[in-house]
Length: 448
Image: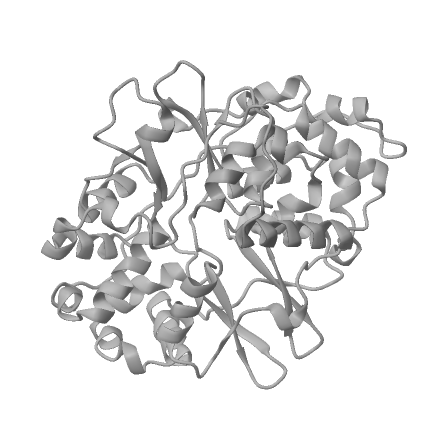
């Protein structure tokens, strides 16, 4: 848990160095006035994690490590969630959380595992895929959103003023937000998760004999790194941005159950709910270029060419640990679409796609999905003059995890803005904060 304690000096791992490099780049490119950035960071450091509303139903759903993949999918589907902490069934009831939980499994991890399983042994999936069609749907509801109200002066914002706005009494009115899913980054995946895909998993004997434990540390595995209810939102936002966590469990000292489950999407939904507050509006009104967005240069954008094999596109996602890629064509990289991890299920649902999956191009794959959905796949984009508020509103309203930055009439992809990037816009890291409050979490990240 993230509590202050002294840390020994040690050599940084390559992973931690990469996180440091990312965050240093972000901070160097931001053009927020220094005092405003410091006051925002200080304000979030004073917002307690306990201010977040609890998950719907008041209980965080857990999945046992020895649960089979089929049953794990059933649990996620029945509770309309996309990820869950994995509980160690061998741990005693009063065990410490580090022994009680082995990690976090999510729907995208299962999708990647299914893809590789089917790639190695097509017979595993083809029989069930051949008999299933249609476009069933299930909702995917996330946990929480930060909501704040109350005025704050734009000019000469003081730390006290920002704290008052961010951590005021309206925090008691925080509302839950709909979060439609990991990897749903374009109209390609904007429909609800397919019940038909779940049926494949639930019916197949191979998926009934494979446990969550066996795939936990491979396919987009996330460690279980909780914070305490007395931790600050700054610590949570640093874990979700700098340290690339997709969700952060919240635990309460002396209590056996997980108290809450905070995601990147929940924080961005919460920021979108701050619209109308002066401290938020003065930042949200700025063009993204004034905030240094996008934080990566154009040659750092990982994309899929429209004529690439679709299998290669999915492998790029796994290798680079990203949930989606822009689809481009021509030497100027004009964006023509998007593919995401959630699209893997289409290859399993459609026999005509699966039977030729290894030879299928991105173009043919997108065309088949468009035909299935009855509409063209239009990528979600913005330009350098788009405001940060527009980006946040788009990410929140469309429940997506990234928006592509394009330039010129050719709509050339020159960047991508993720939930992680948006969160990074609002905070900086105070000196020694990680050592003091996130020391254990950082050590755990270094191990994986």
